[in-house]
Image 1 (cartoon, rainbow, N blue to C red):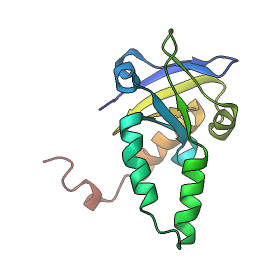
Image 2 (cartoon, rainbow, N blue to C red):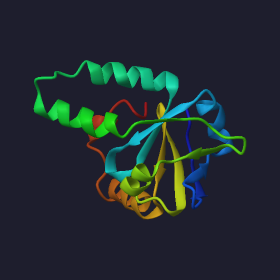
Image 3 (spheres, rainbow, N blue to C red):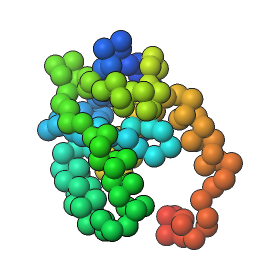
Image 4 (spheres, rainbow, N blue to C red):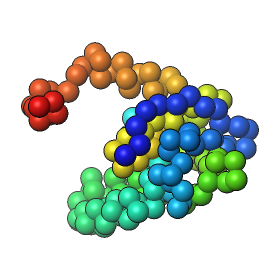
Length: 142
């Protein structure tokens, strides 16, 4: 699993370097899509297949399910690392995540996340100020 956070920059062509510890994780290709809290999710292709299966399993008759699938799936773009270990982030996704200049590349279970530094700081501060309910963490530290 990828973990850690790394500050990088996104160039004027929308390319961001994937940090060395994460490169093997996405070396076979990846899917970039809209994430929660205004970040982008980056799934390796194998993980994306599992995500797709879960999305396909959501009930078509449920409006919330349709909305979530639309949000998540319509933003998806297939990508590969270039020879300089960069990935191109489409303009629509850069706009969604407010990515320009500095970018935080963070690891998460089964995915990477791309954040604007301001949104990253707000997300981290939010968890510090409002920690998860104790029952969510009951088995976290044993």
